Length: 280
Image 1 (spheres, one colour):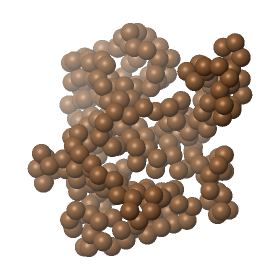
Image 2 (cartoon, one colour):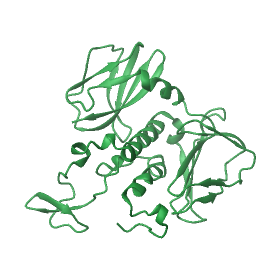
Image 3 (cartoon, helix red, strand yellow):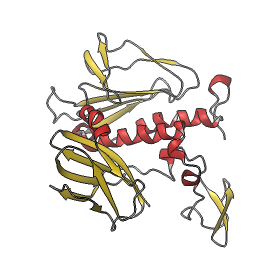
Image 4 (cartoon, rainbow, N blue to C red):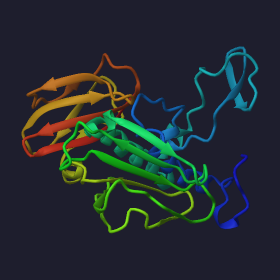
């Protein structure tokens, strides 16, 4: 509503442009050590925030509150309009899920961090590190983002030279100078680690490990040709809420879990896969 509209080719008030910037928002918030809260289906780009209500009934979106409606049940276009099949919205969902999987599985995100926005608040640089981790493992992460409406050259100030890896796809960046600028598109971001993520194996297994039905209610099943060693279910804060050990079963009971979005980590004898599960 109030975004920067000075660049007609990247007008933040345009819905699709705004949705395209949400992954960068996730990178600069979700990955910072510590618990996080996702508000009202932000992982699908929900553009409505606060609604008015009359006698407990939610009405149209408004910046003001008539009564206490902040936690009232909201309209649900994410289901009726099948947002998971809308490219811009599913991209946010998949990117944020990958970021949460990184945070859950990579010990570097249990370390410390610093934020440098000395150049401009529109191009923050975030440094996450865990000095308890050996140097031959993933112990340093550098996150760059460009919230301007035009491309920017950002000086990354990597801690050291050598190969750095984009943790979203494990592509390699050879760094010969820590101050060589990186051009980042408007609304774009990069997540670099000094080593490739162990989730690279997950990328291979995800296609071979499926859960159904999804959304689920009381139970779900797993399709895989591999031997399942255990299954762990995480809520969006990274807390383990359910574990199934040595369980090649026909179905897994989740009737005690509340309706929400969860991450299901399926460990097999070939590695592991991380799937998203919606419980209705």
